[in-house]
Amino acid sequence: MKFVLCDDDEMLCSMVDATIASQGHDVVGIADTTTGAVGLVTHGKPDVVVVDPAVGCNTDFDVIDTALAAGARVIVFSRSGEVPASGRYQPEPLFVMKPDLWALEQAIERLAVESGHDGAGDRRHRPTRAPKGPTPTGPRDAAAFYSALNEALVDDAFMSIATVAPNQSIDLPALAEVVSDHIRETDRLLMLITTSSLLVLLLGSGPEGIDSVYGRVRSDPHVPADTEFRSVIVAPGESPSDAFDRLKRGGEAVRT
Image (cartoon, rainbow, N blue to C red; front, side, top):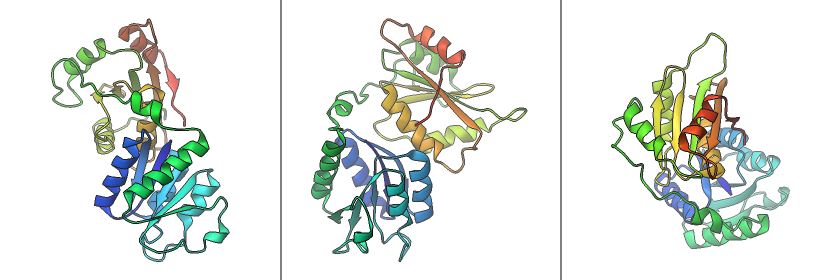
């Protein structure tokens, strides 16, 4: 399942992020304001939103309304003893008292079972290997990127990010910084800035990894609206170079 977190407690957010990842799910974005969370929910299309209604002081619950309208379930993770105005929501948000991470795990497991996502498969396929070849010196290190590309395996993914607006260019170094800002410990990736696009190699990601990275980067307000994400996944029996050629021929548009 894909999650969005809305909380201004940075330390607790990192613990919740780790809890979700340990259960085989993905956090597509974290917001510390109501406005930011509404944008993440709208663009990231999560399955579950974990929110503290106290964010922003006396929030009007736009986050819960937006989440339910988008078809996401809601977990209210709060120090309050009850969910204010909870009777207005269908389905009802689950309530977990902060900072009970064990109870939060139980709530996540309950929603996973109800939705048919037990997370076991995701945990089994989480990428664990580091890129082979020389350690990259940055997103312009073509030698390190192509060395890792040539060692790619089945389920590794290639993604290209570029503008589709005619006669316009995109600030690729700035885009690489945006991607870097959204990298988590469980991500295994390399980036390369070319003349017209930012290339990303995602090790062992499969479609779930593509969707996760796309959701986090696409929802960033610094990414232009006319930016296009395209990808391919190395198929069984396919060489990395053949998969990369498919990307250069257009690949598949990423949409979640």
